[in-house]
Length: 211
Image (cartoon, rainbow, N blue to C red; front, side):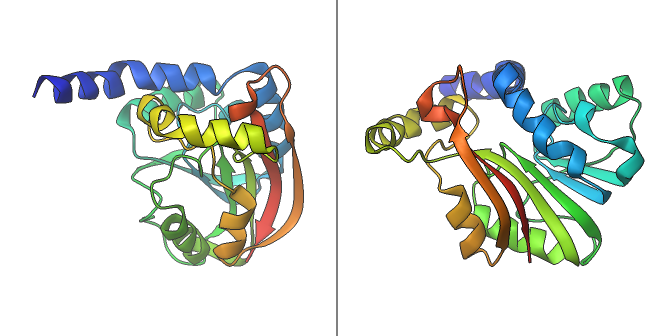
């Protein structure tokens, strides 16, 4: 009982602030600037978190934004970011495995540092595919499995503990393979280690994909 209470308190009061801090480093924000401004039309941001992408939206391209996240605490932080940046966002307090939107309704799906954490990424991508228009795009920027065997060894070793501390985040997922195995075609893919970032969490994949 006591351990459960500690876990609940950690997830409610500490984890949201920790995620906000870790996901807003200078190298990570530089990656966000590469991806977010390309979002257009009716947008679904999966894992909006504390709203770290919000300052990078190009408002002239936006018709509507849906921000999905299962954490009430993070959504509240994102709402404040939306107010600060004077942008309207429709929040969906839910996991990505069941998206409460109509089929064929989304022009752009935005995924930044999210596929690492979704418990069932293949189920989520099946739902994403359902809500996307036939000519829609996924814009993604994710960290994942590194190309170096020594780094992979450490990623696999640390991953169980890392997930417990950082809300279920996995540092060893093969992001391109997950997208391809879910039936998406990757149009552009770039990858590298982020500067000033530990290698176990710093290998980034970014680009866009379509159905």
